[in-house]
Image 1 (spheres, rainbow, N blue to C red):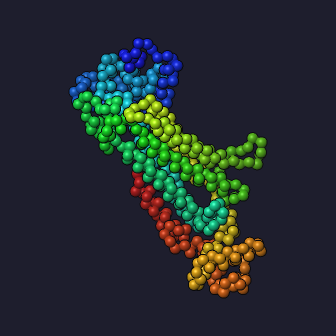
Image 2: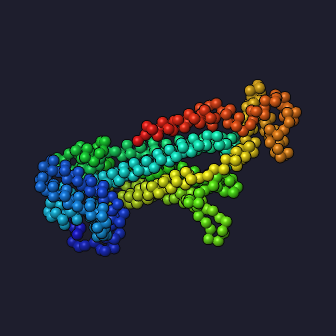
Length: 459
């Protein structure tokens, strides 16, 4: 039975019912919907809008519905339209006329706005906890690979030697910022919309501040029209989710490259790989590829909701029923991707010898050779040209800079001396970095300590 049927002279068509219904999507918010209804019921009783007897009956009925939904005993049918009307219909069936009083001093508009915020609050807390686990995993891997040398890249070309710890800590910082974005979103979302009604408030002496405390919000939405008609908190969450997935995707791309025969820096554990139906030698990094692929879906979720919202006049419009699928999809993608990524990363086997071998090739000590000449008083731009010509000579001869005897080095600059060989050793190049945040051992230790401190302070 439609709870709004009084205005209409005939029933909606079955096709309209099916098209209009959102319960197949929003039924996952039943616990949030019932939590809001329980708080609203207590507020109505406190304000004398319903009696204590009616309140007790309603609350008992709501708890029973929640228990049945928890147990999978409720069928979510399209004729129930959405989770809000489903709960209210079931309540009225179970407790009689008292159930019809629950909707006093609220609208589905502020009700759905509340449910979505409550749901997103729970999802953000869960995703934030998963990110914290990932950051902790990266910190532990960094501690285990303080001395693992590898190439650092720009343009996917070997650039300068770094340690694997340093490389992993770069991602740790990205995921720390991702947690910060989620926290910012949660803080801005921490305002109660319930009690704002359809768009202009309600004509009852309701107590929204009581509701705020009951439901754990930090403040009230200050404008009723804004409270029911915007979804910028959902858009902000989707933006943060898209950035998290982008960081995961970049990391997965590197793992895929590292596990290829061409790089051979690492080997994926069998538990996170699959084979080929035709090529028996294959070991495919499907988990990493799927995470990379799901990133596109989350980008689509953000664009979908931006597009839904872009042309809507104030206040609520039925278009906004489409706010939940992208939020749910993005939250599900993160909840699936983050745990398995941590498992996959933790089980990865790194080929330290191969990584260091690669770091000793490709003239990755060229910048340090230039810095050597700078310390001898040669202007940097002159040093750049000298080392460029030196690298060209070595590339043509198929040798490394350190392979050339001193007399050949001096043909390019008389500033070269025997100590050049110690300065351009790959590990010396790493330790030569003095700036804060660099790849040197002392700096990496400071970065690890900073991540440990962050993990210890964050909830």
